[in-house]
Amino acid sequence: MEGKDGLKMEKGGQKGERPISARGKLFAGKVASLRARNTAVVSIGYIRKVPKYERTEKRRSKIHVHVPEGAEVREGDFIRFSECRKISKTKSHVFLENLSAKEGKGQKQ
Image 1: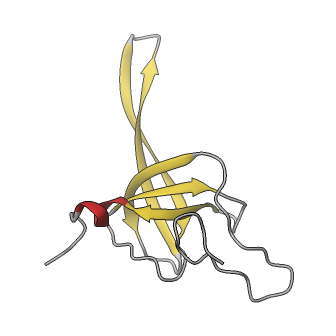
Image 2: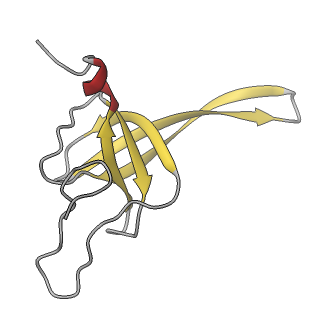
Image 3: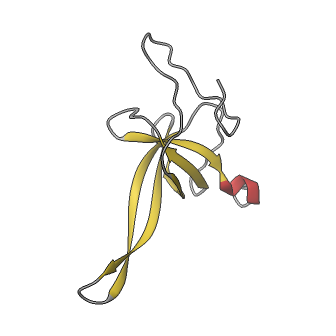
């Protein structure tokens, strides 16, 4: 089964498992860690307004993203991902595309 971007979305081997499909909001962020199998921890930076002090502050979130088999992702890459159904306790997002690979920045020589 192929997703919108042409990547193979895996269908579970066990009875009752559903394929992973992207839905909801799209996000982009930098890969902070690839320690777990089929998982990337992505850091998203954003700016929040503090009305009391009439200032802005930088914040960041770390989101666990499912990376399907065959997708090329490295630490430091900038990737696009989307919301999906709950995959595990902490994973509810799925990888869509590697934005660094398109620009050629992600290639280490």
